[in-house]
Length: 164
Image (tube, rainbow, N blue to C red; front, side, top):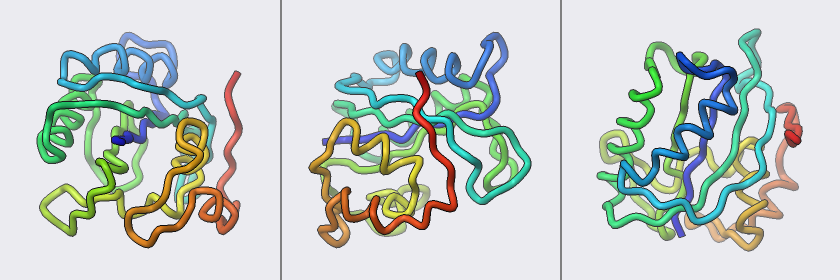
């Protein structure tokens, strides 16, 4: 299974909210060789690391694609650009953040911009809770940890609230 982490904390031009930006991006998946299979609930989450920037809206999508992991990541970056994503400093506010979290359990070390699974997947509440919504039996390809165990190990310094 292939999973993408999706987030936004500022609306892209022409959209009323980060959630609307995310929904519009998901609607364009097919144009980028990506098919949506399942979508988690949306969550309102505090910035990581803690800062005074706006809170994020996050979710996780299970997808299918004919693209390789490298092509998929490149297309995710193109989709981010279509929604005015600017990569300035790490952890800055963003209109759209698309992270390739897991690609069929592949483990890929540091090869350019791509590492699989995502290097911080095991420690991020804003990824693990939505991922658990759509794949409660997910297991980390790195160490075989069950998602339930990873959630139980979280420090909960991050605040995460389901939307709707």
